[in-house]
Image 1 (spheres, rainbow, N blue to C red):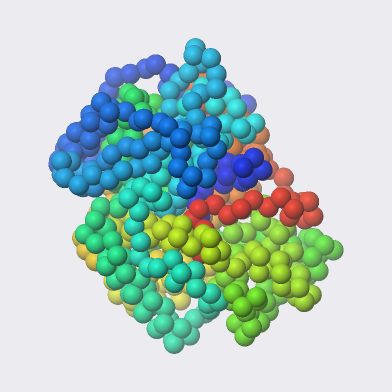
Image 2: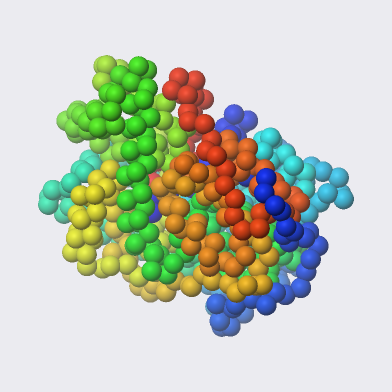
Length: 545
């Protein structure tokens, strides 16, 4: 699942600074006491270890103070740490430290509803930036009611970081990408995937097996306790919705309010091999959306007046870069990664189309600027991919026979060529991962187990296809689904859709949600000229991931 983190609406809007239907009450700000939940995480050593760690964290709390310069956060943000067990079956054994950030609620004491904790997904993305969203119009009401709390999950940044290769090797460029890979290309990439998996085991050691989605959910409960919250108010995007759903299943009585933005399909049968095949198929439709938009603006870009013509120009550029990389650093793989971003976020469309157009006119500078790996991001990007790989490979069984990967991806590439094989290469280290591997937890709650939770989804999202949001709503009984119709941006809360943002604020601040579901019209398509000048920076994990 080639994710770039989500919560894109939040991060994109922050770049310029340094979510009406019949409503019913959701969870109140003061309700407490256990709910009659379905304990899908049976009592065992990890369950007991989580309770021990949470009790310790509650007693210690979080001592917020100035943030280290390395976080790049302004003085208005406070930083602290929380200790969690590396292995929850052994809470008295090795402990690791997670970094946490916070800005206190801006409203009057009577408005205060506790802490709102956020995770942007990945796996491998840090949410340390999150407290800054209080500066956005869409979040000002929320920021009055809540302490805005971000954190870096285990493995990420300064939170017991893991690594699989040297950062310089991770961003090495140019590199190749073949839509229908030859046998020799496949052999090279299989060897690279095997070496990468071996590097993860060698560089991170025995601790590597403890970087899992279940442990991310347990860490979240320890963080809740450390923040002094009897029940958790949480917003997760993309992958953050998956371990958020695990949390809701494991700790239903600890949930106050939860927002799932751009939801991963929670089905055991999907985690994670089938999810990636579904994602690659969905990107084909989103790639078609981008090409259709470019074709409608042929007067601006000159790349052709049909989606097919635009696609042929892209293929032409990809072939030329295989012979002569742009700027010595942008080959077919770097081009593919840059244009994959257009499948995630339509705000990228103007700049990507302009870069393609300029390259074909003899000016490679915009393409080099947008697609070249950034040396200053090398360590972050390498760490993000290491965490991504560790979580997904540890979480579930994967096919270990290369013939299965080759059969499935060859067949899919005939229907969805744009992203299929590049996505396969991203995840192929899981074929060579050292055991043990977990069995995914069945995400499901009974009626009455949870307070109302809110699910936000864009109908044409490719990174987390819409069926995942519908399935999560079916499994978390009483969940409310808000759909941005005919739109495909990944991560919609706090973005440019006022209708979605109104539902988000109504839920978090006033505890109100539609009875079951509601829809919003799509946000406007990007302007082919004006938006290119304010293109937001990529969201972690970086495009190399």
